[in-house]
Image 1 (cartoon, rainbow, N blue to C red):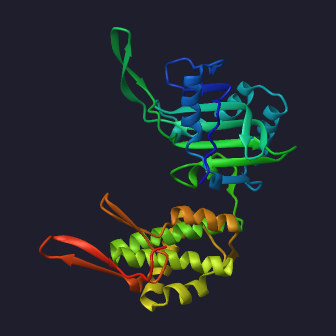
Image 2 (image 1 turned 120 degrees about the vertical axis):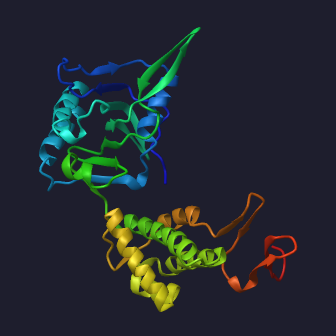
Image 3 (image 1 turned 90 degrees about the horizontal axis):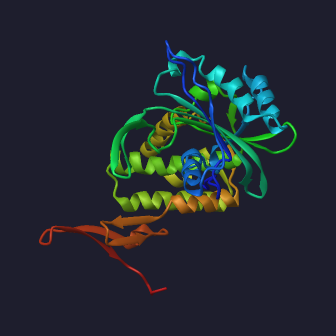
Length: 333
């Protein structure tokens, strides 16, 4: 998954604290001309959560879509960052469930954001909380301060203008559904490339959760399943779940386990795949990087397997009290 990290950090950054009863509302703070070190920290903090597989579009059926797109177009047509931040944060903080004293909204802007071959302005909205104490040392003095840990924010949304009235929109949230349903009119792309990526993730998760952990299958069977899955999509250039179950899973009990796991996985990921879809070469090549046919043995050896599991035998040496693999091959490559 390719990250959206940039060489330079945001050009502007606004921070909005929630209103605390009995205190005056905090004004947004703008940071400009920050040094390279702090820019890179902000850059990593805001963008590391995004990947190219988190891209979607504005959901025109969302009740807040018109207002959100109008605010975005206002910024990209030359409006101030403070205007869109003030406009949107009034909506965000109207949700009392998210209005706690540890919550902070950020609005960040990049003038020259590079997205593949395109370069242009981008704007991002981020929510973070769980402030914690940390030790601050300045010269010979030390103090306990309170701040946000430099980890992924709780929610992140990034907009990149791709033409008049058109936006490429990325979103990150550990809890899919809440933010896009209640606050942000975001809709995940559900094209063949998206379904392909989810299918390979499904296969990898199934092999780990069901084959290895639940059914206690040996690692070589997990590797064989992942290898067969890649071979299946490589030959067909498409996924048909019926064909996949008959040609790769084969055993009725394994098919039943896969059907149940797929249903649970789809509910958890809010993924509703069609019965069949095309697999592009780029999706296939990307899958090869994380669906690796490799057996890791402690920290000493890796065995790469590309099929023909009959040439691998696993055993246990009672005298040495160690596991071992025996490999049969015709010639060294």
